[in-house]
Length: 547
Image 1 (cartoon, rainbow, N blue to C red):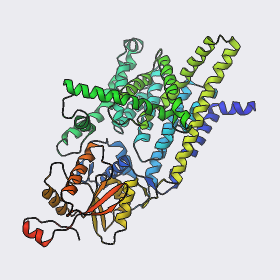
Image 2: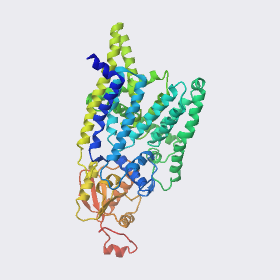
Image 3: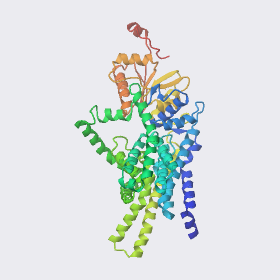
């Protein structure tokens, strides 16, 4: 079987195995008509449809400042209001997934050959977070694609004896697109600046550094400046941003430069660091090996760190970008989730063999192994370790594929909702007395599933501190017939405050907002129409009321 081992370890054989593994794990969503809907997906689809209709970058008529525009613009290019399925949108993400995989292949091929290249290629194709996100309509996979284009093009520019200007142009254009796909791409900007500040780099290739700096200023910075200017110009009438969340939820109104503000940020960052480290391990190891996965995560992270430090002896731009991204993500005060580590997952895998090499060398020295035994250990340990990770990733991928074909909850009009949203959709679609205009803080997740000529789902219009009668008048004037409240209070500021106002209103006026439906996940109250006695008491009110 030596010929088979040689064929699989060759460049073509490893690439074919990687693509076959990717196809088996990722292509499933293309053959299913439904789409999994969460808050991010709902926002992206709403922004894409707004752009496709020529209504601007808005949601419910409000300029949106939180999510940058590249991924919604991609969705707008394939949006069709008359289509009830999501094939083109899912194809867009799958093609980005393929491009990201090929970019990862470039990174691996520059550093490894033979069995190690094959092992890393299979690990990337079965990487749990990569497979999972490739089946969702979210910006993470396009962000990974642009990141890999940036890494591959910049690597080629700096490795060539005379770096071609076109590689630098592609690299910096991809960097700008990555930052405008997810704002976490700004961390890579800091890595590029740190790379260019090395005096030894300027002594070695001053002309190339000067060219890259000029292109960086001319290509990578203007799109970012333009987006920042647009966000600033809509500060009064636009939606909230992550900065608003940090100021309100983390700083609680304190200045970040004050002692109390700095203390709050530090406490939040330290508290999130452990969660972020766990998330980094979950991005690579996943859950496929059950309890064993939990024990493997810190070991894998330690080996990645050892391999990274070894690479820093002779660094390239991607090492600086990885360092800035990992450090800032580790201390980021929000969202300790594995998908934040997806953009650097290929680099983490590329550092892993170097860490395993160091471990094998340490074991050989401590055990006083002879040269022949040490060489065997050196060859076997990396392959065995990568094989264990591949087994875990493959088992995790099997579960992701199963969920693709058999959703955990039944779809509603080709939309797979969460438990609370599904309960609301079933209630609304089962009503005989329609039209219905229902207000809910996460209304965008329901729009694609229940909206039709007789049903409308709108955002919660209430604000904290409103007087109950004034809040009730506002609901009636907006024609709202029902309020939906989750049994678990929302934890995001942008949703928690309107929901808290709705809960206070229901508690203050239970007779005007009777409970009509309740499940383990949600409560739905009816907004009673304005009666004649109410009309006589409040003759100035002009609400549409409920039919």
